[in-house]
Structure formats: C-alpha cells, structure tokens
Length: 227
Image 1 (cartoon, rainbow, N blue to C red):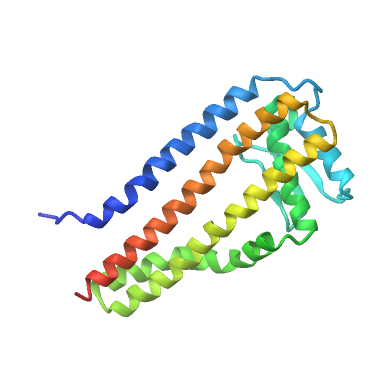
Image 2: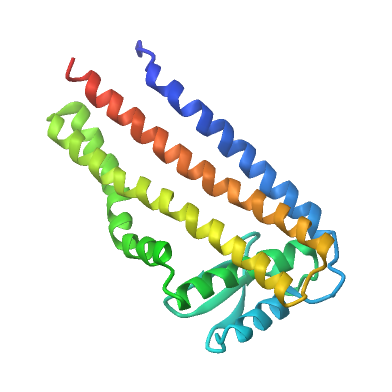
C-alpha cells in the first residue's frame, strides 16, 4: 500500500532532536555530579529537611521512592519523595535535586500562581490528553468538527507544558538561593549545582517545544483540509 509522505512531520524534527539531546544531557550531567561529593557532606534528605524547616514547612515529610530521577513533591499529601541516590547521597547532584523539589514545596506553601494554575489544569489535562487523539482520528475519517474538538483538547495539554516552565525554573532558582543562603554549598559548588538544575530544565523545555510544534502541525493539517 502506498502512503503519501506528510510534509508537516518535518515540523517535529527539531523537537525530536531537542528531546533526545535533553535526555542524554540530564542523564550524563546527573551521573557526572553524582560522583562529586559536596564539601559539607550533607545528604539530600538532610538538606531537604533543613530547608523545609527553615521555611516553616515542618509538616512536609520526606520519603524514599524507587527509580532514578523520580524525585517529586506531592502537594496533595504534602510529601517530598526522593530517589535512593538523592535521599542518601551526599553529592552535588543529590543535594541540588533535593533542594529543587523543596522549591516546589515552598511554591505550594506560598501559593505561587503558576503552580496553582498548573495544578488546577491537572484534572482537565488528564481527560483532554487521552481524549484529544480520539477526536483527532475521528476528524480524519469523519467530520472536521471532531478534528477541531481534538485540537482544542490538545491545546490544554500544550498549555500545561508551557506553564510548567516557569514553575520548574522558579523551583531551581529557589533551590540555589536556599543552598547559598543556608551555607549548604560553597561558592564553587553553586556553579556545579546550577549545571545540574539547568540540565534538568532542558527536559521541560523539550517537552514544551514538542507540544507546541505538535499543535502547530495539527493546525496546519486542519487548514490543509479546508483547501
């Protein structure tokens, strides 16, 4: 069977390349600085606990979670979950990632607007992300109305990815500020921590770029069906 090449796929190539690069960058950078011990010798869990307590967040607990780079803050249960390497590790990578996740806890406590807005989108995105492609496929074989609905639903997922960027950048900024202000890292280590967090930020940039370009592609496909 002959399939006509879809030229709009070219739009996605930069996002695919960026996503591939970001994945390699975050893994290599994390592994590199996982082997660089911090001079203070604190574990990621100790750093997280210290910063949390200094910000009056004694009610936020810290748990170990499985997986690599699976660290996250759960605002519903107010729990900071750190991977094994981060929780027990005393490396630059460990304390940087731990401080970043604490940054999210501080955002939550301060009702940081981008975080509040992103969290409000979660129920919508959970539905729209799964339903959008159903409507898009229906739009290809049936009415264009289904395609329009699918694109609208997919737009919610794109918005979620875009609003995630300031949330992540701000959490990293808070992490560096807390590490420095509380004398948990030295001046030279501050540069290394920024490298770890900047590498991690690339994954969110890649995800947002991919979502935006995919939306652009869908719009172009939709418009070409009108011609």
